[in-house]
Image (cartoon, rainbow, N blue to C red; front, side, top):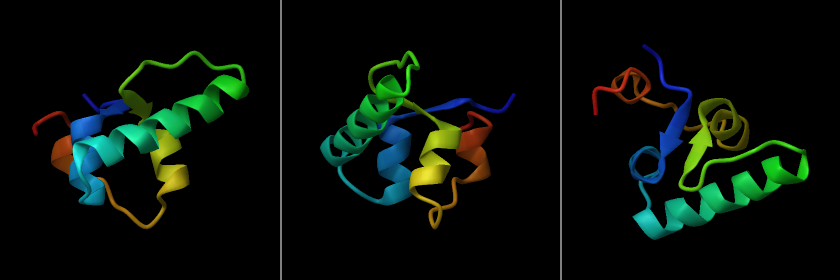
Length: 68
């Protein structure tokens, strides 16, 4: 099953940043989604939104398939 959302730990792993920096990125993306009228989950970001904002960072298959 392919994941729909990424956690802060997974975002930190993909971007090679600290967990707190990943949380800041997720918070900004979630705020943007809320302004567009979407409901969000704290500490998680949809894969599609992450790929739009970070197009040059490939998400490893093991993360997308939930085998991290």
